[in-house]
Image 1 (spheres, one colour):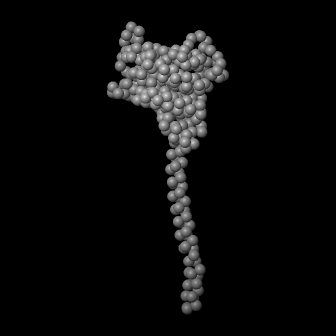
Image 2: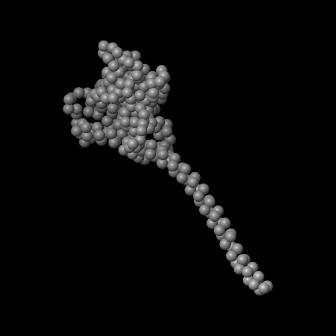
Image 3: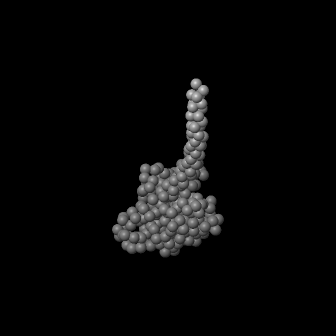
Length: 276
């Protein structure tokens, strides 16, 4: 009996290391689970940022994604956010020319103290410079203010240096417009956009086959027309330097293979559209 008990004690002692080993394995597993969870959070954050930046200049990457505002969608990325992402090396998929143009325009706006009236952002359709109508026009008028021309021409010169197509988008609020020249907001938005196009062709050196004017009237608001403040935000003209994907579409539509060749078939200064 004593011999049997001694054998059992020796057997227990010989397997005691397994308890220590299992504890160590368990602790290691917990450690790696925690490390993975922490790294997974960072990966998700960077993936969201990467998808947003990729979608900003490649709408195919965000197919099926909704967006607000005029044009092909929202997804605005401010230039400050873009600059921060550049510093972190997270914007390798964005066309460097568009990034540089956006930053240069942002600096111009800051130098002129127009941050509260002119916005610069990267959206799905490209680099978007939004100019509130109070900067460019008097109420109910489509004549560009003299004091707005130098800034507008400088923006056009920067945009012209990118060699992508440029689209000028006119927008209004939902307050009905009725005058002999502008029977509705359609006409007002189109004519204002066209006046900007004509100025950029004449003073900024933009080739006529690289620029178009679009009037959205009141039907592509950036924010709901629910207050006077929001309506003021919707009364604007957007200068859009189209992203590479849309730039290829413009080349196909114009019958050219690049942005430096071809002319409008009608010989006019711009492709003026009136679309909802």
